[in-house]
Length: 160
Image 1: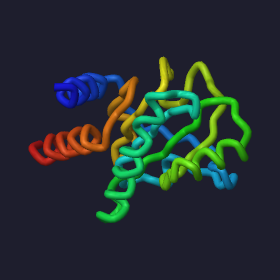
Image 2 (image 1 turned 60 degrees about the horizontal axis):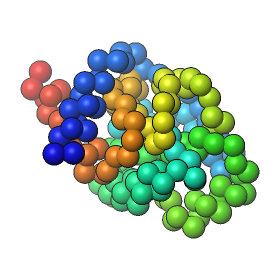
Image 3 (image 1 turned 90 degrees about the horizontal axis):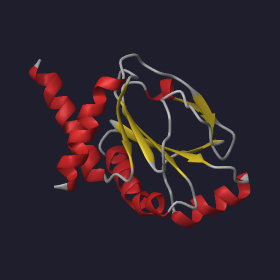
Image 4 (image 1 turned 180 degrees about the vertical axis):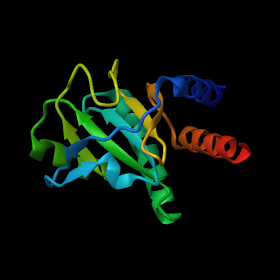
């Protein structure tokens, strides 16, 4: 039931976005990642923090989702955006300890991001292969829910 509720809420939020969005943030090695770098892929942008229990609960599933798609040709990628004021070394130690394999980018907490507001953590945006944000979920997500949403959007596009 929860998966259905999440998919339903993600589908409803699809109407909130229309235009492709691009912005850039540095990772832990100061390499700048831009959403445009991932054009042609589904991008899962996950805002989180090290102190957030629901964020920590979803990390293993986001790792699994990211690795599954990397091994299947790279049609989807996870970008974790650490949304807190924390030192780079402390964050790097945390990422290593959690064995996070997807890129972790750094951002100070802001009232408004290029994708919209972050009313709570975790908040996840789904970016379509054309670069347009198509959904937002406030609260934890699972890889299965993300796969269900992406597959539903692909089926919807194929039916047109």
